[in-house]
Amino acid sequence: MEAMADLERTGRSWLTDAVIYGIYPQSFQDSNGDGIGDLRGVIDRLDYIVSLGVDAIWFNPCFVSPFHDAGYDVADYLRIAPRYGTNDDLVELVEKAGQRGIRILLDLVVGHTSIEHEWFRTELAADGPHPEGDRYIWRTDEPERGWESDLPGTPQWVRSPGPRQGWYLKNFYDEQPALNFGWVRTDPAQPWRDPVDGPGPKRNRQALKEILDFWLSKGVAGFRVDMAFSLVKDEGLRDGVLASAAIWQELREWLDDAYPDAVLIPEGEEPRTGARLAFDADFMLVIYAPHASLFDNHSAGRLPWHEPRPAFFDAAGEGSTELFLDTWAHLREVDPQRSILLATADHDFTRLRSGRAPEELGAALTFLFTWGSVPSLYYGDEIGMRYLPDLPNVEGAICSPLYNRAGCRTPMQWDDGPNAGFSAAPADSLYLPIDPDPDRPTVAAQDGVPGSTLTLVRELLALRRRTPALQGQAPTTVVNPGYPFAWLRGEDHLVVVNPRREPATLETDQAEGMEVLFGSGCDVTGDRIELDGFGYGILGRSR
Ligand code: BGC
Image 1 (cartoon, rainbow, N blue to C red):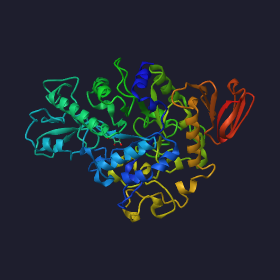
Image 2 (cartoon, helix red, strand yellow):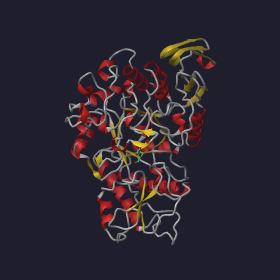
Image 3 (cartoon, helix red, strand yellow):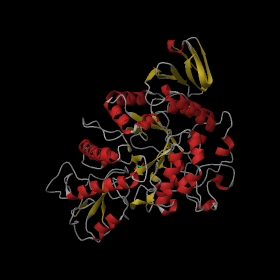
Image 4 (cartoon, rainbow, N blue to C red):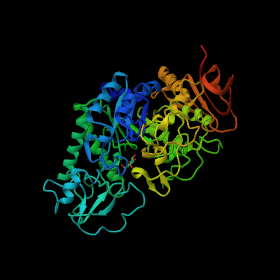
């Protein structure tokens, strides 16, 4: 309740009932024919974005970068990458989107920079530690074994290409040296372990403020924060996570004065430390198992923490909601009012459509847009774009032989024109190939067409917007966890989805006196709800 009261006071409460639209800037709309999306392209498509019924756009990083990791390797935090446009274009986008009621969220990647960042170049060129404290983590003695791991995202030592001697710690790929936010456990035998309040970490914390200040002063509404809880990297995780959270809490205090309206959404779940929470939501159900257990058939690849299990939203009907619901219940218990983001997909994992026929999307979208979360709609999922397998390793998309992210990063499919309306460039110079299927979904083919995925998304989001009980705050109470999956929103709305091919029936007192307000293949008679395969319904009390 306290967190909610804070939000009300600050003007950040819009987030609790918001719908976010995730844009991978490379692939949305190319306005200058270079084969890569850009900000002008997004400005030109603002009316379309508004037509979906979303409240904010989250952009993957669009700053200067050599793009070894699609821009998650930032070389200049204060400049838009020229291929996307200029800082002025971003300001224009913020203004024009704002006039249409859409906020802009950027991606803050501060656990690491690119090797091309001036900070790294300076330290690499030096013959020893920076006199004001190193911004990166360097060691001169041979790293002990035991740090190595095949999992990208685990810190590992990389031999310095020189002139500086020794090794630097990386955060993800070798080209992404970890910024130095210090260590909880210091050790004189390991002098590279600066304390959290050492001079290097302090410089980085100051830089973090300057980055936030720079963009927030331009009207940006906030940030999604990449790898938010691994700034401090102590082994054994928990200490580092708590120390990382403390950095964000300090930052939130500063924000409360400087930009009280600014929203911060972490990648991950904010640890509850007893101190005031720094972030406005948990964005935990992304590449993690609870989300995978509902949707992900792992065609983008299996991550080490994914156990093979059938997805619940699958025609075979062999999955379970248990893992998701347990996680949900835990988050609700620790924080009843806190927003939780639930994404259709993102730039790191399989699209919603993967392994599903278009007629299967209704049940999934009905769940995602009426559950008590903040939905994040990944561009292209509103028309049912496919994950494309076996694409080349563009900008670090392939993390491991089993994990290729390129397939969920392909160009938006607008119409039947050249390159599906994405770009005027020759097809072989596009950022990634377009879905070659002659029947690939497009906006033009679905626009205004009853029953299309695009129409369904618009109708669901419009219904959500005019029905407070279907938004972020009203209670979500599970009525049936299996097939059909059924839950109450508030007291007067019952949502039922049947993601499997076989029909499903539910008898529940909750259905008494209700009628189908919206749905397909869903009938209610008394306390009995009957759903066709892939049916879905939003039920309300008859008046
Ligand atoms: C981003 C990835 C990126 C990684 C390293 C992740 O959490 O979502 O796309 O590769 O951070 O920055």
